[in-house]
Image 1 (cartoon, rainbow, N blue to C red):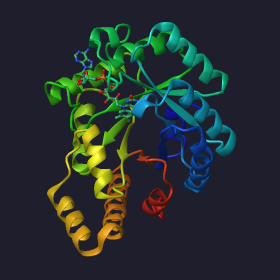
Image 2 (spheres, rainbow, N blue to C red; image 1 turned 30 degrees about the horizontal axis):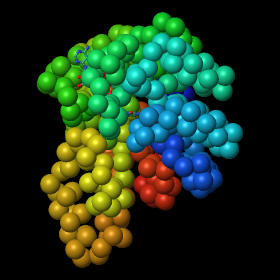
Image 3 (cartoon, protein in one colour; image 1 turned 60 degrees about the horizontal axis):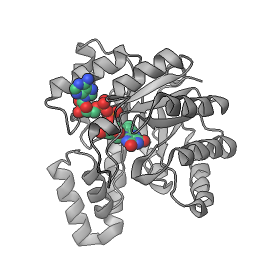
Length: 290
Ligand code: FAD
């Protein structure tokens, strides 16, 4: 079923993001994690595409496995990186054959080590909005999600320009937005308010990353430009000095729980958890909140 319709029927909700494990031998363990997370009754689960070196076929196979083993409503991600229309049609044909009704349409990023030009890499779909328009026109049975950046995308010249980009994505056919991770809910509520003021009325689902360790936080911050509030950094550092890794973990759970609770109390339609393919923290964060 299409996600906007599911949101209308069941809000508030939790949804989950997974990435395809690189090695086939990791897949059974991954599927066990997904099965453990079934108890959260996620509204949908999304599977990344091309991020961290994963391939298109990995995304498709993991989608298929998640449907078969967990029965999740699945939303694959899809980027326009080095893609022509045939490649996009092939991917969308494959997901439709699996009974999938949703896709997250992204521009994507330069793969590490790619030495060509942006013009070569994004020749057919220079922006996510081009991919959204193509899917909307040629695959109208799919609901289309897009990425939103409450703290503005790193390449955007200004916040206003990034809001205009989002307006364009919705005009081209985007049905809902999933946000980049962030750690201060004020940026989400402010973002939604500014989108609504621009006439963007589609659901905006906040993306939440529970902080597992200082190392994982560092890794994530290298990939996105989320700001970490000073008070949170202080608590994490203090916890690390006094109680080590387990104390940092506890702060991570407590912060994400507080974020989720405030979001749901404040009217967010649901929360999208960046699982990093682990179950324990997601279960601890959501315990009793829905
Ligand atoms: P766009 O919307 O095209 O925006 C990219 C930049 O271009 C922005 O700065 C925007 O302001 C600017 N821009 C857009 N349109 C125009 C225009 N017409 N004129 C001028 N400037 C413009 N990456 C992956 O590789 N695989 C994934 O599975 C994946 N999943 C993601 C899931 C979520 C929820 C999020 C938030 C991000 C994900 N990403 C993924 C990362 C994403 O691909 C990158 O953030 C990428 O840099 C931008 O993608 P986009 O779809 O936002 O692009």
